[in-house]
Image (tube, rainbow, N blue to C red):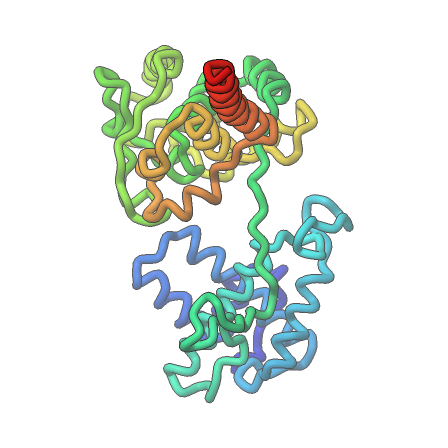
Length: 358
């Protein structure tokens, strides 16, 4: 029975193991080749939903639209786990709008599975869609939660300098990881999964293996000469820890010496660095945002940035790239100055023509 679900606090895997259909659905996602982090996110979201069903006495197999709406209301009333009771912009709650969407996506896909297995007659979550035959100009039926696309936060130049100043106190391994994460616009999982065989110091490039990426698309990306100097120093330092080939970044602690570091280890490093300089919004993904934005500022074409980032679609790239108001003001000023110069030139030509007719 799906109702025999322990609280999420006992562990989301235990919660799903107690609900056979939920456990079977999550195993199916793994067998279909979804990224491990995606499977984990789906599992946590589904365990959260089932826990709310248990708390409110809802049978998930008989849940209707009103029960899903009750779950949405519960989500929107929750405080952010890191910011206490603060309210997030755009979501109307402490949880970010993207988090709310992610929770509902997992529940919707789960009900798709239950319908296909003839466990539930219909999917109570439904989908936002455009009216058939009217295209984009017709009436739009929105989903349960309005979707907002917020600009990713990136540090200002002054904040970036402050971070780099604090990063000087980090161990060599962490400084190299910080440099590579920015230089190559790497995701957290891609950075931590780098292996010694992925390096090409002669050409200063990294091979990002397809199996380590979010969308299973491999790529080769360059890194700067300064990062190359750090890499050479780290490889020499690494030989004092382990001479085995394999994961590039290894633990230096006594307990796990020589073992590959985890994404959580890197997240803790970045969190401590952010707390040191008082920038709580700085995260492991901020380095990727900043790199892609800087490439746009330098005039890179959108398709080149998408290839560099490993995106399947340029629409995904556009969500990561945002120019600051200062950048836009500068472009507007330059563009207007050219237009103004052209108009002045035409006015001068008109004045000259009038003089010639006198």
